[in-house]
Structures are given as C-alpha cells and as structure tokens.
Image (cartoon, rainbow, N blue to C red; front, top):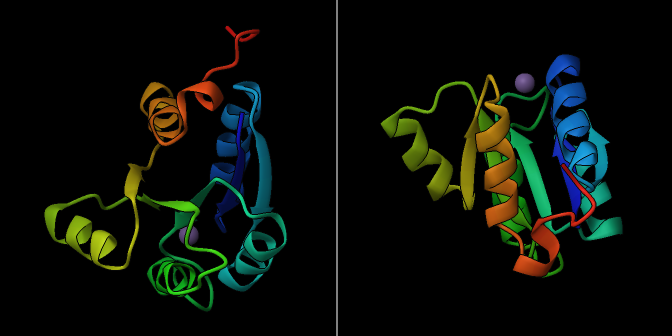
Length: 130
Ligand code: MN
C-alpha cells in the first residue's frame, strides 16, 4: 500500500480519486492547489503524486518541474491528471518531468492499474481487497 498525494482543484475529481485509492487500500493526502500540495509532499514524501494540470495559481506542469528539481521530492512518481491527453500534450507532460498521465474522466480500471504499475509488487495489491 502506498501514500498517494492528490493535487486537484475539482471537488468531484478529488472525491472520486480519493475514493478509488482508499478503497484499494492506499492512504491519500489531498490539496487543491500546487503550493499546498508541494508542502504536503515535503512533509509526507508520498510514493505517488496525482497532479491536475489546470490549477489555480501555479499550474501542474510548473509544479511538477519544481518537484523533479528538488532532491527531497523527486523520488515521488508524478502522474498528470489531464482531460486533454493528445499527442502534443503528452510531450509537454513528459517534458515537465511527469512519469505518466491518467486521462479524465477516470476509467476506474485504468486508473487503479496505473497506480499499481507504479508501485513495487509488494505494495501494489491489497491481499484483503476485492
Ligand atoms: Mn483543475
């Protein structure tokens, strides 16, 4: 099981992502803007950060660049949450340092498979789950 930080300003997406993750046995941390999210990352060192791209203030790509440039934070895998997963955007997401992306609206199975694939095998599945 992992600690997953969700940085997302849309309350519906936040609620859905946290529900899916907690239901799969993960612990979530939640922030609705990049500054608050980076502070939580610094305090808790999450294994995974789910990063909305369009955020109030600093956007998710700029926040990812900051995280990946910071020796204390860059170990977290960052997955962009994006509604516009087109080719040019994927290049921008990768260039910012994201480890991948998850398209919105969420496909539940793809969402959880992406999280599981980002974790060591021992942390990916809840043996009590399903
Ligand atoms: Mn947003």
